[in-house]
Length: 111
Image 1 (cartoon, helix red, strand yellow):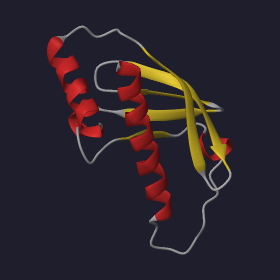
Image 2 (tube, helix red, strand yellow):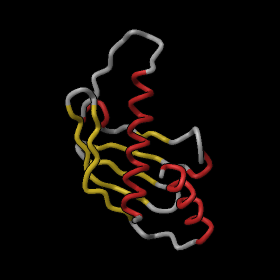
Image 3 (cartoon, one colour):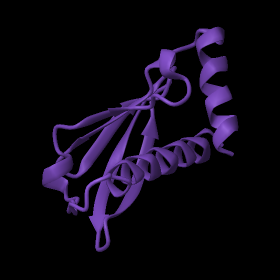
Image 4 (cartoon, helix red, strand yellow):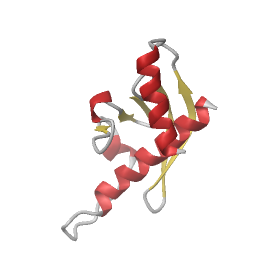
């Protein structure tokens, strides 16, 4: 169940990422590829900003912080700037109930 919630979060983060590029006020087109994502980190700022939720990209892998634990996996940029997320794993480092409660709250929003 936690894996499905994380997939939902990553899908939402991916959508937010592509909206950022597609809603540019200029008419400039940006081609997204592994090379344009590598080395970049994005932080969720519209909600849960204080929790520091992030996603970072390196070659064909991604990783990030979900508010209580870290997650990682592989990604692929497909034709039409579609980001395919796969092989998602989550660490179970945090056992702090308050921190886990925040992470569960985030998961509930995306369900």
